[in-house]
Length: 169
Image (cartoon, rainbow, N blue to C red; front, side):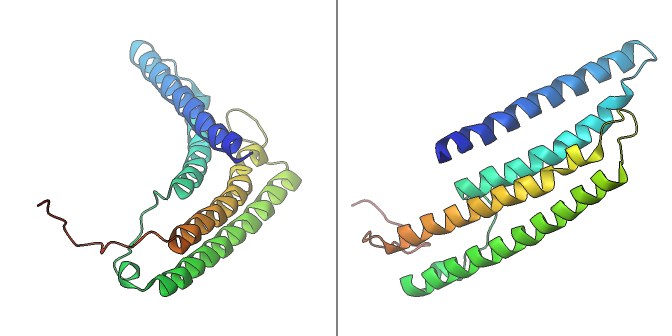
């Protein structure tokens, strides 16, 4: 199931990014050659960018590619690293849960008010769904990452000092 979700996230981002690049390119060419412009393109590009950003954060969380300062944690004992990993995972889950709750309120408000996009006249809540949907994905990915880190710290593989350079003999 998780492999399907992994691929779905990556392919969705890739397709959206490809579509955005093509749409922006076509819009630039049309503007350059004529006085006509696709008025909907900017609105669509901005809203798709929100989706890509949130999905990209989920992918980065899964891969452990988010920026982090681990200078102190790298110098802790294995037991304290586990505590730090648990604390970081818990803080991440709380953060993304708050984001999800805010996103649900935002979508509910947009739905109730009947807000639509300016040029495309599409319901705003469709684009607003990016926040709660991806926040729940981020919760799952944060937990997944925390479990992976816990397992790695629990394995019997000896640790290597982070700043020690090993020279071949």
